[in-house]
Length: 507
Image (cartoon, rainbow, N blue to C red):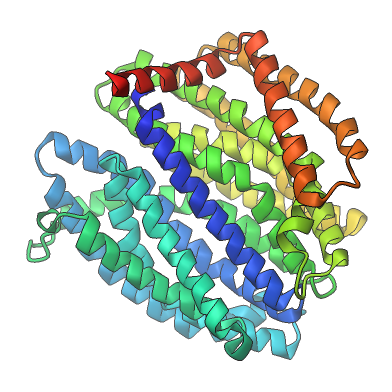
């Protein structure tokens, strides 16, 4: 695993950071042109269902195809296996795209009953455009999984940046004349360009054999593994759809506040959580493939420690600086100061959601490595029911902030249940080592927060960018210094792996 955290891991982290920054820029563009109006609500609400299917294909494919491709490669059949999956996904994606486009006029009014007639019309046509992209998203997903299996993580991330860049470009060119439809059309165009980028520049021509006959038994076996994994990935998006449905019952703008708060607060998870889990997953799958349980458990524990080390201080710092961050990113154009305050209020309640779902990302990779996707799917199904219940109860008493609070509570229960079941499945992990690391990281984060909270109040009158930079730098130095003094092994491991990789390059 150490090699994964060297130059390859650092490059992938940088590409993932660029990907998520481009996602933030997209949200800033939406905020600038549409603020917290019905058009913003309509676009963000309409994006939920197609995006659920996008992630069903993308993350489901990566979590299934990476281990199955590596297994096929051990038998010299990797190109044949990739070709089988690519062709069947093309057919399935086309069928899904047509059905999605036809069902959009019925699905949107059913889900968002409180939308105005204008908002409903916008949401329907945005959904139609996005559903049309399903076939291209599916094919992109297959090729991105192939690139991850080949440890070309950065190329995979670069292809996703193309899609977001196309949305942003389309918004700049056509938002004033076409409204939110410009964003949807940009997404569709971006998926096509991204697919061509991979086929022409990233994937060898011999890797995909379109003339090869479909192996029915192989495809059935693959999709029996794929479906529970992909359905598990959908859990998060189903819960997000539930959140948006509940937000639709509140005044105009609430859907926007909830979505911007979630996207912003989950930034550390998207950067560190996804990066660590993606880098660790091939190592877990390989250890399981060669039946090396000691290596499997060590890799799992190290992944959890690194996840906690990077996510906890990052999200804590963001919570302290949340109003300033939202003001800096979104408060311009049609996005008012009142919208900043409402978005900040929602963001605070997402803290637990980010932390627990980040850890759960790592736990799920363990389940996928031992091909137990059905088990985690059952936990996910229960979490959807709980999310419905908690959304109903919390919004009745707390208003719209009950929506992110429900996500945080569900995240805690989801991660705890998954971890307990995983322990039983693999017959235990070195828990004392894990608990010791978590305690040190928590203590270092607490010391950091105790210093930067009063400091942030002292510099509250500074320019917002300078305020953020000042607190972020002080917080980072405090956390790293304290964690080092506490002899946090995951921090020493991380810095040691990077130093060793640097020395190798120098020699």
